[in-house]
Image 1 (cartoon, rainbow, N blue to C red):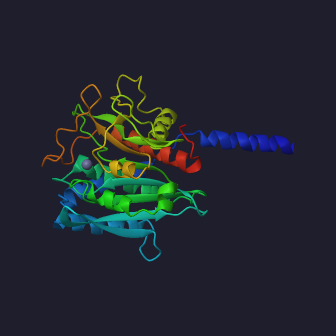
Image 2 (cartoon, helix red, strand yellow):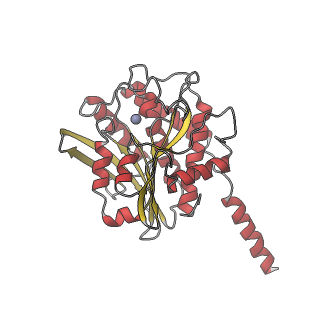
Image 3 (cartoon, helix red, strand yellow):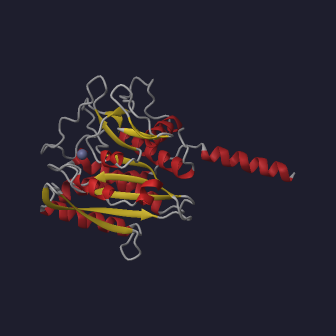
Length: 323
Ligand SMILES: [Zn+2]
């Protein structure tokens, strides 16, 4: 009898761990409203100008409302300058510690600076990062996974914020960094053609060290594999689904995931843009004054958020998730 109970519990555990996670309607509304505030209430977020400071203050408040704070070290500001620019940029890092020391680190990041109102690029990504922070902040801590949620500045001026942050990571933090999920454009207009879901990657850890992917053979690193597994679990973005514009992982930098790659951390840029067939074009409205709130394909954004949530929880519970 006792054995049966254990079997039953083990079966239930297995079953529950195989269930795809879904965000709630409230979480989705939260994502949409955060995006709207950044675009319509704050507006253009150019580095060194008022919009960036307004956004920084706003994001700090949002993190604090979730329980992160500077007093206990779960919220920190990172100031960075580069040798080619005097501009100082400030990024915000929120940390959800693990129960155990020496835990793996999973990073979710998005850049909050913009050229223009930046709804797609990248209020949508910042809002997605905030939505993940809110969900995971309310959950019990993981035993062996620390979560970091980062709003980077100065992506649009050479990835300065993320380069500075990554350069400042200790050898221990780098070794513990399991994967980084950068989000740069997570909403597309319903009429837009360039709205495939893409995972841009540059490299991966192997037994022999850190290796680069290539155009012919894009890296399928820890982050990309977890997202692919999450899509299979959720059933979203199935490659065989003709109604879904889909990109497999591709070899491309061009956002803050690059900075993690340079220090040997598996990273992807999770984003909507053109298909492989179209050359992976960025949305036409990117960096334009017309990148405003509009008639978005919200269903796809919701599914992308669900897949991200599932991938993060999967890796946080099992570092081999997606292998
Ligand atoms: Zn961007």
